[in-house]
Length: 140
Image (cartoon, rainbow, N blue to C red; front, side, top):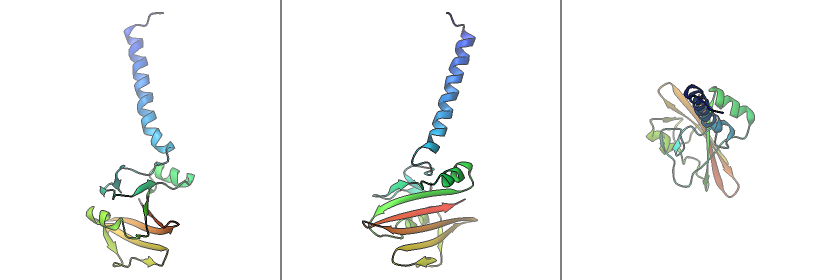
């Protein structure tokens, strides 16, 4: 069977379209679906050494992020360092609210709000066994 140039071009265009769709959709199926810019904290500053990106496993979180309703990023770091990502966010123009103690603090959790213009970012650090620190950043 011989293919003419128009048919071959149609097939190539379809294959290219499927490839583009596949590359865009693969983010939502992967474990790091929530990391918008790999290697950066919230897309504003380089990721500190030792930080491992993660994402919530919840299907509802995945759908909210995919739909653009919410944005979330998570990082796990060695040791208990609840404020570890705040300098990176400050370098990106975010200003912590509530002073150096944040809005909430106990032995196993730290929470703060950071603002940049009209944008507000929620910062929650929690102690994990090991010890490790898991920081969750969320906003819109």
